[in-house]
Amino acid sequence: MDEIKWLEVAVSTAPERLDELTAKLTAAGMSQLVIEDERDFLRFLEENRKYWDYVDQELLDRMRGVARVKFYVTDDADGRAQLEQYVRGLDCEYTVTPLADNDWAYSWQKYYKPLSIGERLYVVPEWERDQPVPQGRSPLYLNPGLTFGTGSHASTQLCLEGVEEHTRTGCAVLDLGCGSGILSIAALCLGAGGAWAVDIDPKAVDVAYENAALNGIDRDRYTVRAGGVLTDAGLLRELAGRRYDLVLANIVADVIIPLSAKVPQLLAEDGIFLCSGIIDTRAGEVEAALRRSGLTVTKRREKSGWVALEARLAK
Image (cartoon, rainbow, N blue to C red; front, side):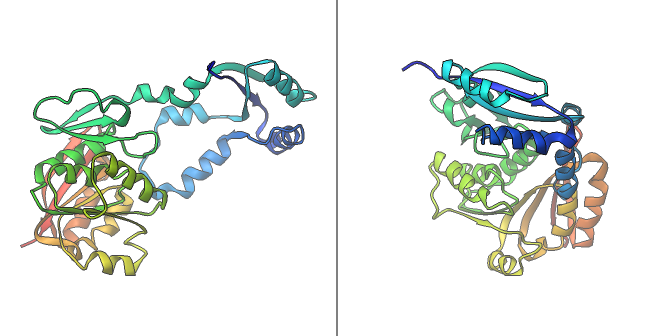
């Protein structure tokens, strides 16, 4: 079968004319539209500020002044006829870029390669699972196309180094803000007896379970729940029904600070709380919060402007 090829059409306009443009394209028969608007992007950042400490400048620059609508048609006679119909009467500039179907769906895969972390871990994209694993390393298979947390970010690598150091055979692990499940699944691959994971995004549940299945981990060893321990007292009580040898939180400072007050209810007597996702300029605030919560910082890791802290219950 011949590979389907596509055309990406990007129509630029003024921000105040986006609604008018989308209405015209919809009336012309194009209902599958991608809207890129700097105002919506900045609004999204502001409304979700608690989930990050900074936004990459390159991304901000790329979105500056943007107001455009994108859609796709097949790169053939039918598609070009549709394109002519959709843009007829538009008084806006537009570009048409040929795009192979394979590029559209899979070109992002080139950015994900196997990654050695610490002394034992080897994070492998699922489509490269047939490649040999370096001797002495434990593979951790992920499908980055489904996940938000692939091991490539410095904060995740710092946390994985801590997971590797502190995972003991049969230990119990709790992953708060699990995302793709990479941290808790890594602990299970390294010999943890069981892991529990929580994320405020319900989509994370299926993603984490799918990544666990890629590693031969079933649900009798791994439990993933949707919710937040800061807002759901019932979920916190349920999780606090057992104590964990390793509690993980790769989030951001604004969440770790209030979360630290809950950790003593969850941590085993000799357990480790490992938190990451902390930009270096805010590490002092997090350390102070840990001390107020009855925890003693025992180790600090740093990489590329990010910090991970380890803490134990104060004696």
